[in-house]
Image (cartoon, helix red, strand yellow):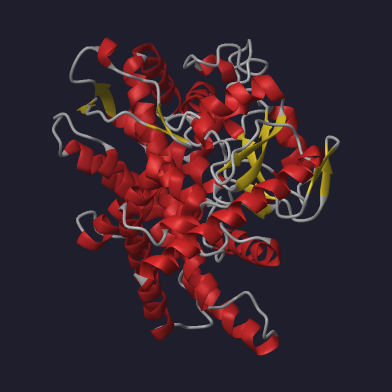
Length: 494
């Protein structure tokens, strides 16, 4: 009875704090951008389509304009919709908008450490180091291109082994793409049948799936309560710990064989930097926690985005065989059949590059972007945004802007070609974001997309196991994200 009484008192106290917080937020609301009136604790949650948050955001934009405020549970978020507002914030006022916002599922894992989910001076130091070190290990250069070509060759052999049978390409692409970043971070690739490797990929996939699910949305809004309650979030918490343990073990292996004069991979370089900084700076950001979380950030990000884009691209090409035929024709003209594609080929292949760009635009997997946070009190378009305010730069709104893409709901590579058939630059095409927190792996991702895409199409034609009209090419909305419909396909040797 005493325990129940204490629980009731604690619950009432928590709800009281939430109500008082809501009242306080209403008092400062006049200084913030307009938006729908929130309920205490729940915010605007009940006013949103939980299965398709992006559509709800679009509807609110039509009512409140390009800058407005919503409350996701107790979280107050300022939304930026459209190219002008997003550019003005992320590029023109890049420093003020450079903080990292809340993503409870991933914060459970990273806890504000590492290069991706940290803010302020920690983020700046880790970002500078990561960009320089990735460049040292060949990112953007011939060195990493050879690694991608090696993995592409392994993938071709695997796909040839399917003998044209219908398969789900997901695991084939995930293993291949993940091995590229693995060779940079860990200094080695995994065997495609390695059980630990497959388990890691599965856990990362489950974490991403949970983050996008309705339960994941609730966890994102009410994690301060839900982290103590039973539910699927408890398995995600366990999986995040397993991922951290795996990276920690990799770091320990590197420590035991480290040669400070000859770094073999990203982890080695970070360990060497740790040794140098600890001798000179007791407050250094180069310590074990940031090493583990930065390595995990790179492994996590480098394993999913490119493989998902390729998988969706194959589905779109099967739906649009005329586009696939034109890509095959350009590959034959520029590369031929007797050598592997090289990244420099993309300069001579405007149609193929336009197709890749259109796949990225049309897929629009994370239309809400990655949340930002205001680093200091800021005035933006006449509104006052206090330090700590969360911001959603809606990158999806750029990808569907009819000012830049005349038929935004259609898959149309001509969006990226001028009247002469040459590739044109479109300012609103920002699949890797912009400003001080743009994706630091964008150069690697671009190279991977081109080399994997062209190598596969150099060797195979695609076949859908049933009628083309049965292909559902539209990404399915799921909460904050969009997911690819599950499908099987055949890789038919040319």
